[in-house]
Image (cartoon, rainbow, N blue to C red; front, side):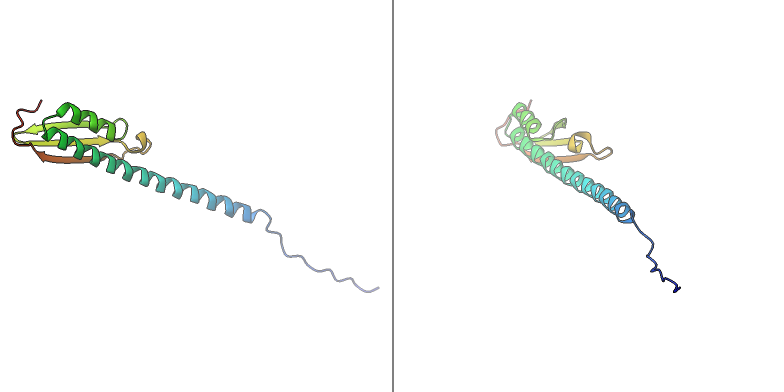
Length: 124
């Protein structure tokens, strides 16, 4: 009787591709979360700067109450608005935590300065 030659099958790698895909997907999700967090932080930084600029402009015209309201509406939620008058200058600082505090340890800040308009009395 002739010996039957069996063909050897290569070892199976079943499951290896699944593990690699799971690791790649996890890495993709982490990179995506970091990118979205960065976009949120930059957006909130711009909102703080815009809020500070608008508040400084209004306060320099003598309307500090409208300046505070405008800054709070333009700034990200939960932002702290500080309006300081020193002589004939107005200084506004807006601080916030980006993405509603979802990025721990990161704070954004916007500031603006303006000179009061001529004829504007003491700013309240």
